[in-house]
Figure (tube, rainbow, N blue to C red):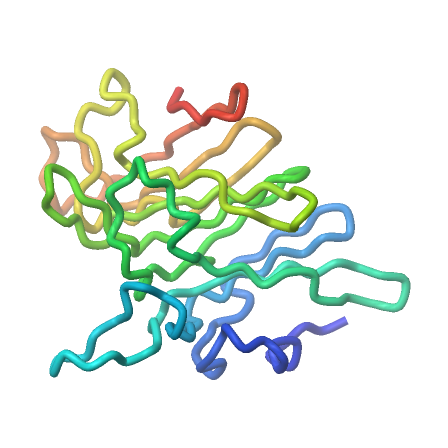
Length: 220
């Protein structure tokens, strides 16, 4: 089989398919294929914090918001099971993340294990002390229930244990650039992260490990 943009022909929420970068990230497991489309531009009509043009008008789209396509293998081939974008109501309110999902590049990395999908959005911005940290990054955790795939958690550099990593999130960290998931253990690649005593431009990077226990993800 070959999977290309024709699978997206009937998906109204994903636009600008010429730059969607379908297949930039991939994960497969037991008849399930998870495909990242981090370049997808989304229809913004139902989003309360619409992207604004420089003149203040509503553009009605979110460029490079990204998304995830979940395919399921049937006897005769592959069929679309879900198209996952990030509605505002599913962002964890405990995280002060920019509410505008434009330029998140959701789907830049993906991982799947059982009924859990982890999706990287390395260009998402979090706020720390009220100040935005552009492209600090985030990871969205999805769980499958009777209604489909639902966003349950958003992990960012704000979730790091200061006893393990005392420097917290920074701009241009790109938290979530790469992911690996095995049951209740999640590894998150942060290629531009720096310890506090290192030059800011050295880009040594780090991998953070998170453990899930009773539905809660903890930096370990």
